[in-house]
Length: 153
Length: 153
Image (cartoon, rainbow over all chains, first blue to last red; front, side, top):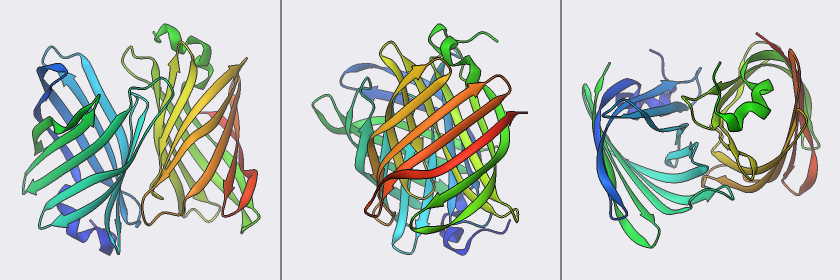
């Protein structure tokens, strides 16, 4: 596929992925989940459209989110919107096939539970994509919340 | 279709829409565009997944965005992410079949062109959906930027 030249270093992300993950946080009971993720290249533009959905081990819908990974001459950036009423704005760094995004803004609607800070690490290894998500929330400092391993579908 | 009860008042939004619009702003030349919009109900949850794409009259890809319309007991809310590196968080009001969203936060990545404020008005009338988008940007106070009329597909 013809990608925008700025996207070449993150070609490893492009595609659809399925796998399982585990959620935990000091304020909740740990849980397992199944996940579908897509990173789709737009028409000749230097961004990927990102969508994600998770389901519980009992197959109930859990989380979803959508956004864009932008590749700029100054490095990667990420914006995400969530039906929980949150948005995230991230600056990032790419090292090999590992992307690390650190939030610069986390916005929330009036009725949403505000999150203070989010760090997302995504690593590609051929047909495998793994990620972790750490967050600072409800007075808890930056702590691991999600970790998943996905396979190309 | 079974919608979450909180979504009943905005059932008029649900579906896929196509039409044309016009963009203008004091800082740019006016332009026409074609647009595809979807508002899709999630699985029993009180939000709609919103996606949008526009193309120029010469059929080149222009803008796209994705987000969620949330219906809460306190009223509608909207979160949007854009590949331009922007996110919007809105509080809203529903009057009949008109939704008015006013931004409470507009976030931007480091390399994005920050927008100060956005107001989105969406009106449903059966098989027609029309909207306007006003924005405050680059020192220009809140001014109309986009207006479009879409038809159910």
